[in-house]
Amino acid sequence: MLETVTVVAANPWWWLLALSLMAVGVAGAILPVLPGAILVLAGVGLGAWIDGFAKVSGWTVGFIALLAVLAWATDYVAALLGAKKAGASPAAVAGAALGTLLGIFTGFVGLLFMPLAGAMAGEYWSQHRKLGGFASPADHALAGRQATRVGVATWVGQLLGTVVKLVLVFLMIGVFAVAYIV
Image (tube, rainbow, N blue to C red; front, side, top):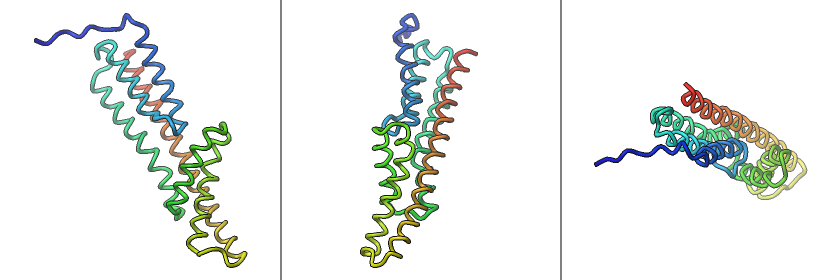
């Protein structure tokens, strides 16, 4: 009753799609709008399917899926750990996320530094609300120091998370390539 699956390796458009998904996934490991690890996983799954999982087994795809889950979790955990270590408010974390989104539209430098500015602005605003306004210049200075500390910690956490995510994404592609070639 089961029919044999026809291998579609003769159609180069499938390979173009698989490789395109992987390439866009690598970009997505840096850009927060694109789900990088998921796109790479989709490209890997398609690449394995093209030859009927003959060169890249289902176990290999499963291992790569585990790496994708780790990369996805890194997105959230790294920035939160940096923020938590510095005692960040939820507003600082939200500011970092908003800064990251705005950074997409301002080029590489903006993408690099807008999360820092967003986290600092969110923490400064949170300190202002917590104190019920600033009664003296010392309150401004205290809020500014706290905002800087939280902003830098959140930013460093996001940068480290991006590096780890990139390593995992390239590891996913590397495992696929080795499995396909060997």
